[in-house]
Image (cartoon, rainbow, N blue to C red; front, side, top):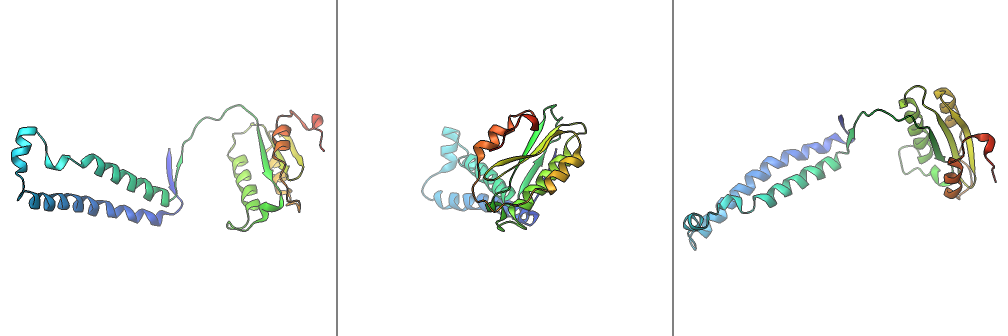
Length: 187
């Protein structure tokens, strides 16, 4: 199990936690000192068994936990767990429609999808069967099920962005259930 952070500079916000703890206990002590003028907390604590410092500690601990989760979220915490892979076959579907050419990410969505798919293929254990499917207005089976990683990577690299704006997700799902290219019928 490994942790990784996309934006580790945000982890500096964790230094706020000790100051938050100090401020919490200081504010309890300061407010308790003012309240003692009006009530005797020691006498109340002896009678009812209540500790002044424990009355809001659960809420405070929950607040600290939420702060830690928010900081980890800002830092882009990723958890990697190594698990044995299954003996199933994989079909990688890549959207090649015109909308994937948007440059709202580092290069564009299409290139990131292709690179992520190639990284997935390279991470597969040897002998695992996989296939490649591209889709836009129509679906195209680019590579039938194979255990050759090089063939899979080459088929992904040769997928090009189409000028078609529509995305037929239903056809992708129905085509992904077909066992091989020989039985596929394209519209």
